[in-house]
Image (cartoon, helix red, strand yellow):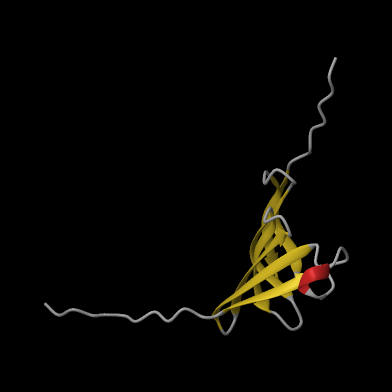
Length: 108
């Protein structure tokens, strides 16, 4: 019985800083932080956070330039609750998506 070993080399993570319109900006002007992890030549995982480190979005892309969504996605509210989840294929929403309506609470 032989042993097979695999060496996993972590790909570097890229950090981008985005303004309110999700355009690239400088760190000190950013409203959002985007973390991009290259998994392989055709798969990138992307996570967007507020500058206060609250998750906004997590998803998979087949390309980063231009950004083409391809895989599972989740979108979050200000309390990190899932607002929507589903699948993209070549930049187009496909299959079944789940949308959770934000509830408003009022005091009586």
